Length: 149
Ligand code: SF4
Image (cartoon, rainbow, N blue to C red):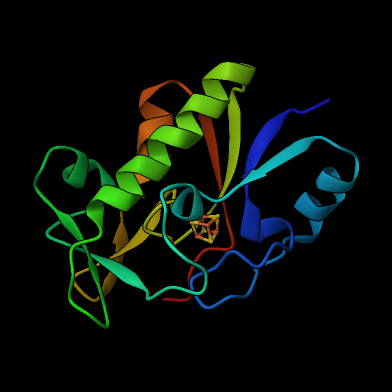
């Protein structure tokens, strides 16, 4: 039975911006037992894989949802905020549909970061867009694989 959603890259799916994954052994075991549903908000939002890395400018996911920050592509300098918001909304749709109350998410990601994200070139305390929306709707979040500071 599904107990939680999980960032797809944490259970070995190659959904990361660079086409790789970031497997977490404990979550892989839970995935094998059928307890986790893997989702990648950036793919669900319409971004390709591999894709250029994006970074917050002006604040984290919470600030972006208030219109005070943006997610800008590090190579093309384009505003990709709409893809990240769309992905977060799609994940929320699944969570509500299945009445899921818990999410294991990849730290540091502009979508999935629970406690840490990259803002203006630095790793700072804050949340990604999907993590922030899920938290606002009462989903319990657990961040995995924090970025090296
Ligand atoms: S958006 Fe989340 S699930 Fe997708 S690759 Fe990034 S951290 Fe992993």
